Image (cartoon, rainbow, N blue to C red; front, side, top):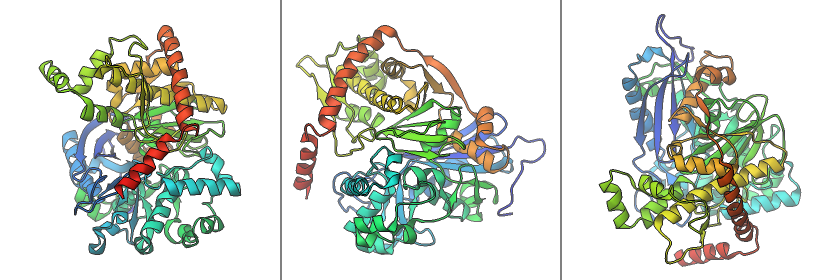
Length: 560
C-alpha cells in the first residue's frame, strides 16, 4: 500500500489531518476535505517544553539559548493524532492525507538516517546536539559576520532578505555549531529543518520544503550562498551546503511520500496515505485564512508574530525575513516579516509583575489574569497611562533584525499601575506591526488588509488597538487552529483532492472580514504615540545609543 494514493470509501466524506508543531505543544485537527469543517482536534504539550536554562541531565545553558527534544515531536504523533481522530468520529480509512507545519527556523543535527545526535549516548550532555528552536538567539555574532561579509562582497541574495539575515536562521545556527562544538558539527551528516525532519519520520522520505529553504536557508534563484563565500566566513564552513544541507526541494502541496507502517502505528492512520511536503506555521496559515490575493497580510499572533503576504510586486523591504518566488502561493512573491516577542511579552508581565492583590481580585471575579488586566486597561483613553514601550523583550526580528536589543518602558511614575503597563505592552506590539506595514508600503508593496490568526484574536481590546494603530480593517481567521487547518488543506492537495492550494483555500478556508474597524479619533491619538515609539525605536535600534548591546555584553561576561 505504501506510496499509493488512497481515496475515502464510497459514501464517506474524505478527510485530511493537519498537525501544527508550535513552540510549546503540537496540535492535530481532522478536517473534512469538501468544506474545511473541523471535526476533531487534540493537543499534546511537549514534556520538555523549551530548554533555555539546562539540558534534561542538568547541563547548564548559556544566555540566549533555546533548545528542544525531538522525541517530544514524535509524542505528538503518538497522542494528539489518535485523540483527534477519536474525537472526530471519522473512520481511519476516510483519511486521505496528512500535512504538517512547524515553527521556523527550528534546526536539528542528525545522522544520515535521520537519527538526532542528542539521542546518541555520547551527546546527551552536549547542547549543540539538540534541536535549536526558532527563538535560539545565541548565534547573533555569527549572523553579524554573515551580514557584514555579504554586504562587503555584494552578495546578490542579501537584498532578498531586506539587507540582513537573522540569528534565528539555518546558516547562523550552523556556523555557531561549527565554531563552538566542532566535534558535533563533524558528526552532523544532515542539518535539517524540523519541518522536514517530521515529514521524513512520517514518510521515510527526506525532502527539503521550498518555504524554509527560501526564507531560512537563503536559497534564491536555484542556489545557496557560494562555497567561496562560506569559506571566507570560516574555511571549515566551505563544504557546509554540499555536505550537510543540500537536498532535493519539494514544492508546497506536493506529496513527499506515503505514510510508513511505523508512522501508521503511531497515528492510527492508514499506511500509504499522502504525506505532504513540510511547511511553516505562518505561511501555511495564509490560505487557511483565504489570503490568496495580493495585498492581504496575515499576522499569526501567538508567542511571537509572523507577518506573511503574497504580492504581484517584488520589492526590497528593509528587515523582511525574505521574499521568495512562490514561497506561499504559486505565481506570487511571498513575503515574511515578524516580531520575536508578542504573547511571550504579555505572559512575562503576568508571570513577573502581577501583584497578589490583582490575582486575588481576578480569581474572585472568575477571570484569568490576562482577562482581568485587559478589562481594566479597556477603560482607558488612548495615552491616558502616559507610557511608551518598545516590544523587544525577545529582540527585534523586523525591521531591525537584531536579537541583542531588549525591552524599554518610558514614562513610569509612582502612580503607574499594572494595567497601565499591560496596555502599554499591548500597544507596543501594535506599533511594531505598524512599523512593519510602513516598511512594506515604503517599498511599494501595498498592504491593503490585515487578517489576524492565532490565540490572541480572543482579546478584543488588543484587536481594536491593532486596527486603530495600523488604520486598517482587521479580519479574523474563522478557525482556532489556523496552521493545522492550512496543513490539512495542503494534505488535501497532495492527495489529489484539489488541483492547487488556491482551489483548496476557496473551498476549505475560513475568514471573517472587517471584524474590527479603525476609529478615526483613536487612530489620530495613536499617531502621536506612534511618533514617540519611532523616536525610541530609531534611537535605541539604529546605533545612536548602544546601551542595550553593552548591557548584553556585560551580562554575558557575568555569566561566563
